[in-house]
Length: 216
Ligand code: SF4
Image (cartoon, rainbow, N blue to C red; front, top):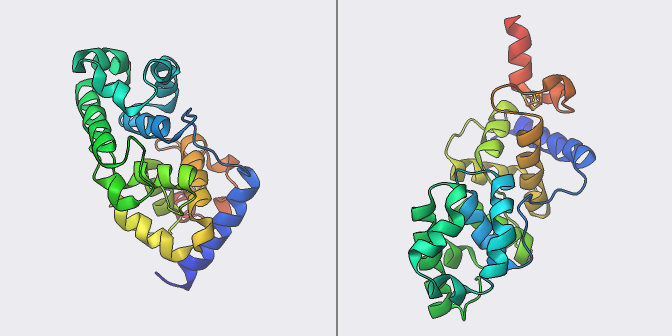
């Protein structure tokens, strides 16, 4: 990590603030428990699909105890369309049991405690910490990893390493919003297969775009 990456990160941060002034998670939720479940369901699914499912799910299951009160098969059926529903139901029920046993049924506001919950990785934990508890953290999903590498902020491919690099490049007060902006930028502009470089405000600052031009 050098001066160039620090300056590049500052530019990306500044430019994305203009195009995405108020970044928000696209999962629907009204409390910490709902956001936790939504992030678990989002694995290998889309936010749109998860929102379809949780519209009914969150009416039926309103507290941690509700998820363990039903048979596993019933919860599986209720979340089936998000995919990987057996494993997700298993994780959700195991996580709820821990919440009940150790946290009075509430979602903890610390990284260590969140990472002890089945089905919760650093990405989901950072979503919960940033959006519920105001604890700074950079969400690194597939979009953030890809965009960061294309922009030349890092060459790392491991999400945790990408998170650590970005955390060093940016002031702590920018972490949460930066991550969420880059998620949205990757989802709608810097797409995996066909990045929309012609529409991208980061084009003059992008290694990937420069390399594409060189190849022409
Ligand atoms: S210029 Fe293209 S590759 Fe670079 S960040 Fe923008 S969309 Fe992605």
